[in-house]
Length: 323
Image 1 (cartoon, rainbow, N blue to C red):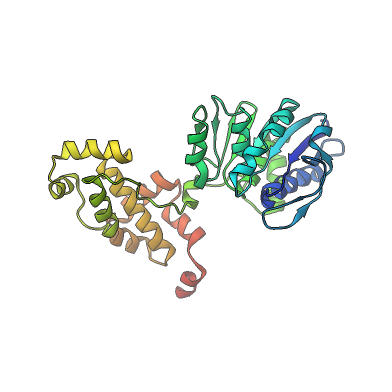
Image 2 (image 1 turned 45 degrees about the vertical axis):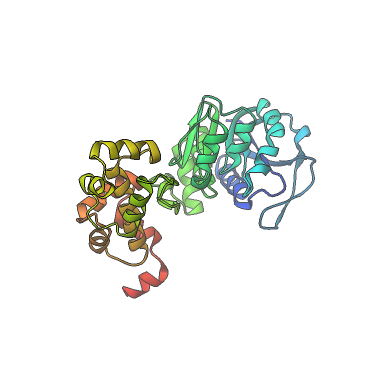
């Protein structure tokens, strides 16, 4: 095997971990492999000078964008301000033309989109920016829940630490699963993270609509998730037929009444679990009813079980209360 060249394209305002995570994964993979089979990892910047990250730390550059003759892998990190990523698109387009494969971390997907690299391709980004990515680049197929996505030679990942997951997948493709497992063990991370990124989302589940029939019902469901919110009850409350109500919900929020109620109840259960409630307690107080109903709903919405979510996201204070 030959040395594989990885170029990370950094710019002012870039997120530090979006840059450091790929550097750490590939440098670890390179040092762990036999001589001559590792990675050469380089950081390029627009003019070859250091750049300042969003947290204020400066990153040194190995070379300028114009000096990059080619790369086996180009990694495009993201920034808190997606406009900084979009501004980097011309440089990214030029680098991509000289690279074997291209991968974005977090909002780096906006640079790929603006460079025309996502047209007709599946992609992902940080859950908080997925809708905006889809709006700006309608020719892309955005998967808002994926930890990372590959479509041909274009790869993209979810937010921040998902860059580790992405780069482990790249190492696995290059060097095989044993090499990727060795890096994951060294970094003390999952080789393949369970579930999708929706489990990390704290976004509001109440869609924005001012429809005079739908809006009051949405607010009522959020105010008391455990109440009776069956379609017939909601329809009587609104003074319309259940069939008409379903049509209005689909038009206004893209979901059925039952689908929306379940989303709100799962969100309520999630918050209860994070606050220290048991699975049984969260199921009852959120309106989902039974442990089994909660487990099935969590699997549909978050891709993990309530117990796995509880172990990962319950607060330290909640854990202490059970000691």
